[in-house]
Length: 80
Length: 194
Image (cartoon, rainbow over all chains, first blue to last red; front, side, top):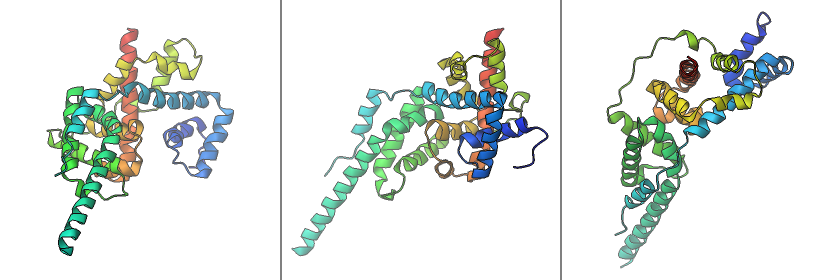
């Protein structure tokens, strides 16, 4: 992934999802972080994407209905 | 006499294993529901799906290999049942312009905010309804991986096993699925701004 000097921000965007998924290798991660250290434009967007993931997860999580929990317990197979 | 005693011992040990299995499976029900809620189309469907999954799991407990990932095993049953219930594979939608980059949603929100303040607060401009509805608009194949990985916290490897697809497919669907989700969110923001 080295050698994207023409458009470092575009290259940084390509690395955004893998970076947040922690699947970049050490060299790639350092490369992304070097760019983020000096580029406010990319840093803001990375920060937003990270917050978005946390937020989506929070707002779509619904508690399991108590009634359903009771029904599942009733599905257990009685001991002979 | 010794044979009868050995049979009784075996039955007792079997019963203990089954009770332990049921208890461990029930302890995971909140996590199973969290994923089921968004794999299924509605709360009612999610309820039915989870009940059907547990009924099947309790019947087939012997096929679970102790020490392996029980949550993934339950989700494998659940996704298979979901497909059996009439969910058919969808045609992959053609890529749309708004999926061309990852930052469209941020740019759209920033623009409507008149220059940005705090990135952590920007997301809060999206309502719960916006997000739930955008997620349900993502085609099944893409939504499944988002729900498993980003909401259910499954690894790529687990998601690949649950959905019976190669890990590379999990990664590519996740990448594109997240962009589709953001496109849907951006569109809802655009509609609200009109």
